[in-house]
Length: 457
Picture 1 (cartoon, one colour):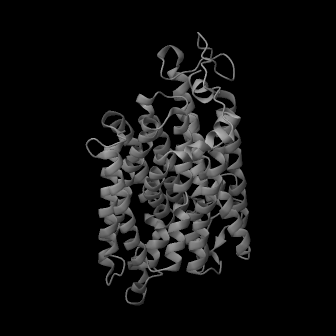
Picture 2: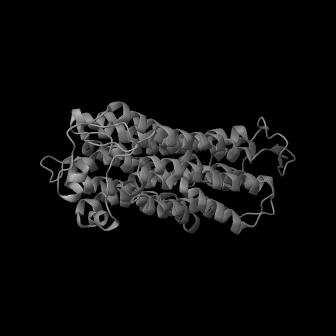
Picture 3: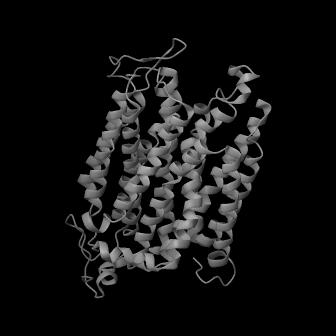
């Protein structure tokens, strides 16, 4: 098998492709006679469905947090930022584990096990929000466990890479990451809606009373995802197969001797780190700068100010869709140029938003929203381009490991952004990001995107 030959230094590819068992023999995506597109796309479809549930789990806290104080939880703005930041910290840590699992346990067990793990934090939040005296420490613990949902990304993406040839890697990885990222927007969009009424079958659960006397079913946000996670596990167990890629932990860590690993880590920390970080904090950021928690609330009626929960889903929705759409373009034109274009757009958008963080009038909000949505838009080609580059410029065995590693580092975005926003002014955070973005954009141009670049891809 091609991957085994790369891993162990000898060819073990059988003469014929055998897909009859749980483990496929003779699999080599670069050879059409040893590749089955139906198995590849089936694997992509089921694992992406599971990944949607995973990202919904990861961003569950960001959907619930803006409503906690309304249903009686006594939490400060800083505590809420911490609560939405913790899943980013744990996600990055979980990804450092999941990145090593594909060649150790195989695709089938990886996706099945992961889908079942999503249920743990979902059940935890289902019960926690029903009692406003739930200790803050327990809320932080549940937020930490939500990171499992995003952590699986660094296992799923390298695993998917085993099933597709390089010529289609941009499309496959772009679709999986983009559609999987849609889970972030899904929970933020469905959350506020389904929390407004009792779900069929669990209407016996007492709704949470708000400070103004209304009722919300906040526990619905967690409950609605549980059956779908069970379905994802069942589909994975019954329909997925493994390819015999084997590598020890020691064999996998040699990625750190390749300087492209470190450059691409800086790039993905910018592209996905900013996307995931602002996606997690977007609702709270709107509330603090333009909404009920802002200085504008002292001069304008609260009803005239925007609510963060209303707009929070838009950023991840746009970024996810664009990332999925840009995969085929990256296959056609190469990933480097789109990474560069995305980085330039992100830098300009962040700079524009930095001038709109101390508003004097709610009428400035549409301009702020446009700048932020532009930022989310440009994360799409930047993220799609980066993941197209990795299989093209790295040795086959290292590409999967680097995808997992960069995904792990990028996942710290919600934690980094949340900690910065809770510790210093928003203006300083945005200005610092502009400087970092400029540096990364120059690196992308020098090493990958310029004519005669040393590592075009």
